[in-house]
Each structure stands twice: as structure tokens, then as C-alpha cells.
Amino acid sequence: MPRKRKPHVLFLMPFLPSPPVDGGKKRVHTILRLLSDRYDFTVLSFINKQEQVWDVPALKKFCKAVYPVLLSPAPVPAAEELFLPEIVKSCYSPAMAASLQTLLRESPPDLVHIEFVQMAYYRRWIRDVPVVFTEHDISNISFFRSYFREMTGWRRWGRVVEWMRLVKYQMDACRGLDGVVTLTPPDTEKLRSFLPDLRVQCIYTGVDLKHFSPGRQNGTSPREAEAHLVYVGHYMHYPNEDAILYFCREIFPLIEKLCPIVHLWVVGSGVTKAVEDLQKNPRIHVTGTVKDVKPYLEKADVFVAPLRLGEGIKGKILEAWAMRLPVVTTPVGARGLQARPEEHYLLGRNPREFAEKTARLIFDRVLRDRLIRNARKLVETTYDWDRLADQVDDFYKEIMENYRRKKALPAQSL
Image (tube, rainbow, N blue to C red):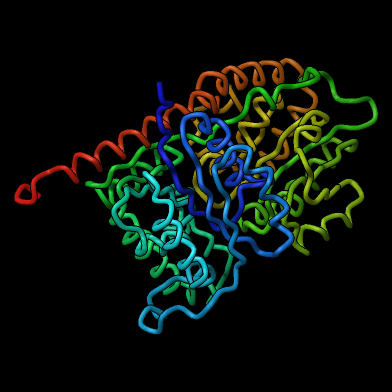
């Protein structure tokens, strides 16, 4: 009996999801890995430098094909110059458009999945195939929750026009799609409030519980000589840089007074000059890119997530919970999580409260044990990627089936 053909899905991305060193890459990498037995995946992606082609073979374990395109931005068409946001202009590439059109012609997919807002521009070249899009962070709809908050005074207000371009672009891009994936219920509700007829599906970011399984029992008393805090992020992504700078400048000095044996590990890629300079404090250690964050989570006593910007589920918090590592975060860090303060994590609304809650976790073993037990149970029941991958599969099937029905309708009924 002939083997049934697997549906062909084309992923369109602004970067290769390999190595999976930050949240966005981990999400896509995990979907490719867990659904490769059900779909033939092709990845069409930008690379920033030619050396990144060496990351392609690892992706081919899960993909039918991977096509890297060297990012060399070109001027956008003059008619669109005033209307496109900067993030889209930075990824405009005739070479990417040509590669996409060639793939669509020579190896037509059953579905195209666009990841990240800057790639939605390429929707215009996709015809006769359903298209879905992942909205990773809808915070830009609110100016003061957007990344434009990073500026102050007249510089902030000078960015209002750019913010308006981005919001209009996001909404216009979503209108032409067959489906949109959001990462949290608040993001879903917000997008539906703007586009009530759009097919929107919330699929959480998950955690790989097989990999993020603690090798030692967290929640024991801190080491006699020292206690370790950890934060993980990609620091070229402004909310991560803002979070760690805020923590080190306003919170960490308070923790040092409460717990003189404390050390902080700043783990992750895209280290900026401001983040690198944090090491002027000998108790702050900046690792840069690491192959795996798990060893740093294993040796930590508390995970700190002092986020002030952005929406969406923070995969870093889920990984800490999976590793039985207690978490202190802000209202922004907790937004979108199906979790409660004092039951799954501690909440620090201001620098002093954040510092006091962190010190409390360092010294209170009973509290630590209770939080990590509840949090691990939560990720097992709600954020296990094995379960969430099934939701992605169901969404793909629904979108493809709806598209087939629509195409089959008689012309007069359309």
C-alpha cells in the first residue's frame, strides 16, 4: 500500500531557528522537531552572515529542505517608503522575494507559515495556498507597552509616527491571512477586538520537559559560601536588555545588602555593550551565547525575570519552572501565564519589593519547595510542548480544510 503523502508546510522566517538559543527560535525549532513525522517542512530564512550556513545541516534533521538567504536590505519601492515601518524595511530583500516565488512555483506547499511581523510583507507574493502567521508580541498596539517606551522626552514623541506605521502595518497584514497564532489569551482578545472576523488561535509557548528536567533537587538551602541568581535572554531584543539593566541598577544593590553572598548570572546571546559593562560589579557574570542554558539553571537558587516591556508568554520562566527553580517576576513577566502569585511565583512590583521577595526565596526553604512543586505541576499539565504540538497540528489541518472548502465553492456563492 503506498505511503500517504505528508502535507508540505513552508516556514518563512527572518532568521534560522538553529541553534535554538532564544525564545522565538526555540518555539519554531520545537514545532519542526515534534511535527516532522506529520509534515514535510521547508524553511526559507534570512541569515545575517555567510557562516550561518553551517547551522543548516542540524535543521535538515527535521526539514525536507532549508534555504538560507543572505540578508542584504535594499530600498523598498518608492511608493511604500513613507508607509512601511522600519522593521519591515530592514528585511526588504528582492533576493528573498525571488527565492520565495521560485519555491512556490517549483515546490508548491500546502500551507505557508510566516513567523514574525517583519516577514509578513512577503505575503503579497503568496497565491493559491493558505497562509498563517504567528503574532509573537502584540504589545506594539499599545504605545506605552511597546518598545518605543525605551525613549524619553521629545525622542519618545518623535517616534509616534513610526509606532502608528507599525500598528497599521500589523493590522493590514493580519487582514489578508487565513489564520493567526497568538501566544497568550490577552493577545488573542486584543487582536480579536481589532479584527473580529479573523481566525485567531492561542497556542502557548511550551517547554521541553524531557530536556528541562532537573539533575539535582532545587529548593535546598543555598550554598554555605554563596547564592546564585540567573536571568536568561537575547539582549539585542530590547525588552531583555531593559530588564537586566533595570535589575542590575535598581534591584541588585538592594539584594546585595540583604544577602551579601549573592551572585548574578546573565546568560544568553546578543550581549550589548551596556550589558557587558555590568561585569564591572564582580558579583555579576555575563556569559554571552551558551550552547545550553540548562547547566546555569541547575546551579541557580532563584530565577529573576524583571521584565518591564512586551507581551507574550516568557519561555524562560517556563524553563525555570520545569527545572524546579523558583521565580520572582514583575506584572509584565507574569502577564499571559496561567499562574498565580504566591502559588507558582513571587511578584515584585517595584525594586524594593522585588529585592525583598528574592532574598526571601534564597533563605526560605519551605516557601521554595512549595513554589517549585506547584510550578512544575503547572508546566506538566499546561505547557508541555508534546501537548501543544498537537494543537499546532490541529490548527494546520483546520486551516487547510477551510481553504479547500472555500476553493471548492461555486463561483456564484463566493
